[in-house]
Image (tube, rainbow, N blue to C red; front, side, top):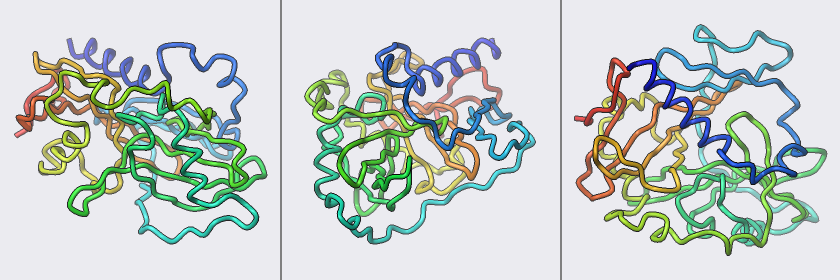
Length: 272
């Protein structure tokens, strides 16, 4: 039973991160990879799925690997690139892209953006951007980070394996509104995320500061223990790896029930 559950969890996360269709065929195969590094993948003893970037020929990651958590720095003012498009224009281009595989529970335009910095990629300048929701001055970061070329020519999303995959401007019209994505939900995905914030982090398996997590929300409701729930994947970024923590389920009926992986990893139980 334990092995079967872990296999299902692992397969579910792989489907979430890599997609279970070939909609990206014809484009993802040609998308540039992050630094051209190899990526190894394993599941650690805590149930985290780890994508480890094998930098400079280092030994592939394993449960004994030591890595440094990248804490989310305080927001800094990002100036528009010299001779490039404005931050406002970059946001307009980004808002026109579909949120498919950006793992946002709604259209890109509905989420707040944090402009992290200007980075170099393929010998060009890009705005690095994260998405977040905010309530009572509390931020929770969601989805996947993206980059927008400072000349406005290209947009990419970053996947867990460190690769940049293209987003196509002008495709946002294909996205459903949040209410249409979750027609049976009594609360919004944002409400579900902030439900997690109300819990003691340690009791729901989140041992780091909440600000350091990025949460991916499945694009439809899931049923866990006969309860319709939002399925949420907490993600942490390390110096040479990304860790996808065990799935967390938040009841979509407004009851604020949260289900987490049991200590023996044989099923999901109600968080206290």
